[in-house]
Picture 1 (cartoon, rainbow, N blue to C red):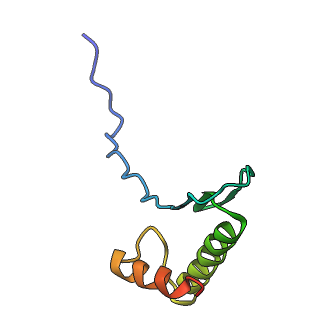
Picture 2 (spheres, rainbow, N blue to C red):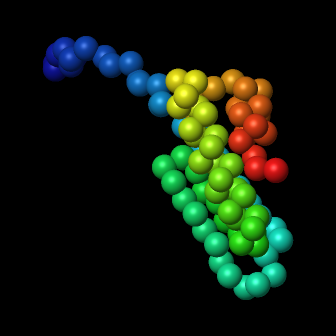
Length: 90
């Protein structure tokens, strides 16, 4: 008879929460393929103006999250929506 394995059982680790922002522009009619990515975001498509606005919005959003000492993975959805709205250029 073999003895049971004496190594302690390990609890499976919870995966870390992951989050990301995705921006999709649909008004491109000049044939350019615009793609901008970062650690926690991806922006695709759009006219030059739209893509620039999405880029500015995401940069300001992450700056505001940092200022508030918040992480994208854990910030409240309503608070994130308010930050994105506030970060969107006129």
